Length: 123
Image 1 (cartoon, rainbow, N blue to C red):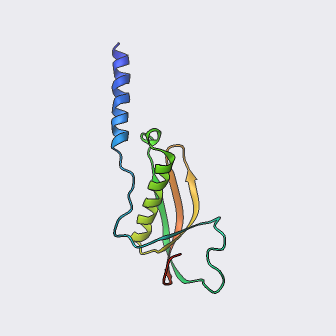
Image 2: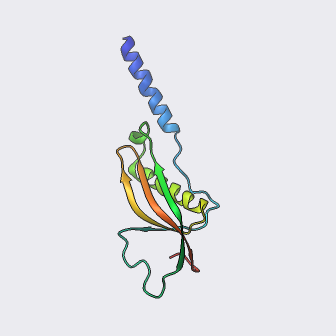
Image 3: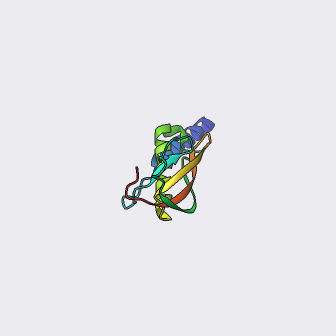
């Protein structure tokens, strides 16, 4: 009986902790950031290529080993994208070339290169 009570208590605590976890939210003060996936074709046609300066690598991640069972894949992906936007904005990037999404069982992670590109509108 005592062992069963321990199992129920631990399960209840895990559910409480998981439900309290916050997904990454996009900072409302962020400037627009264009995410370009490595498989995206014809992002810019010839003659429209902007002048870009490399700023560094950015990573967006969402999920933990103790929350992944309680958060949908869609929310995990959106949280990772929001984190990527926040990371890019923090270093002044307006374009991120996403080179990889790293698959884990318990989380979603995107890795990319951030650029500051000079053009009027991010498409």
